Length: 397
Ligand code: FEO
Image 1 (cartoon, rainbow, N blue to C red):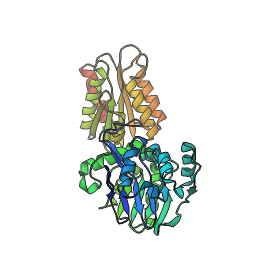
Image 2: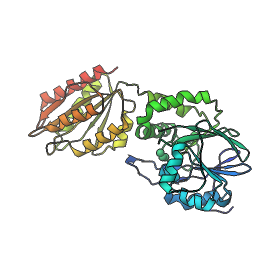
Image 3: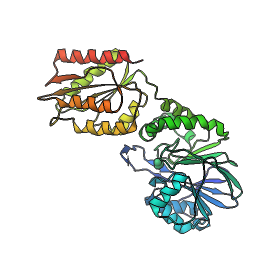
Image 4: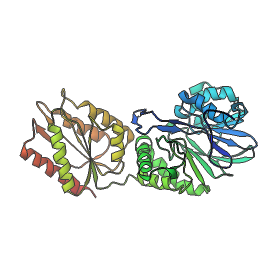
């Protein structure tokens, strides 16, 4: 059908009907430098199914893409794998147009959709492992609680071997190509890691459990279709292997130095500490928070063994960028990181003890006593910073 936006057929029965959001840069506090996609899928059998919708501002484009294949009013069923608004935002208008025979969701999904949208239409819970034949096609549903919300589930279409994995195995990456094998490896790895670090890290124990169960489900996955970023049709196990590594949070000999500065004294310390870390055998990433975004710091610590933070004292407390970043990192619940705090001060110097308190609240181990310098660090103070960094690196495995 003539439409400005066209669906893309991705398997015998499945069409991609999502949207590309080229310009989003803030995804609830996460810097999405490469934009994102909101993937939704039509399944065409003897009847028609829709898997998820898109963020609300893109609803017209979404309906146009569906309309390139079928009149949206002819959709019979909707499957809601995840009710967060980037996937359910267009659901109210979709329900109005489609008037589906049924909407399927997990138990928590049913509750979330009722409460988000006050939806009173036919909404049915699918239990973990439940199998249904719809439109002559066999579908199975598996709960993936907290991957990424309590309602999350994945849907498997047996005929085509497609796993609709919603947030799981996704990434924020806008592109005109639909498949991972059409994209650069380094970009894929970085964006998948950034997504894991900023969205999924707190749920790592549950993810490990899910990854362990996945082979037992005996799914013959030919196409892995997440709700963000590219689809995987070759080497579909690759993102699973990445997740196994990230979920284990195995510490490495990498140190991330995160700091900000007022009059360059803490910056001088950060540079000398970094040299010491390097001399002690660590690989080092330095993030100055005036230019580094909190979500990039979260990505940097995903495969690190140490988090070393520095702040000057401002108005008897932390420099605000450090407070922002540590509040964000605390919520992501990183594990197996050794930590240490440093900073310069003029009069009272409370920032460093405040850093120590916050790191302790994160439940992370301390690698070294805090290091403070009054006013501007001289040669001797910088040598101490170097030795301090070196000693921290030597503690890393
Ligand atoms: Fe892409 Fe948790 O939503």
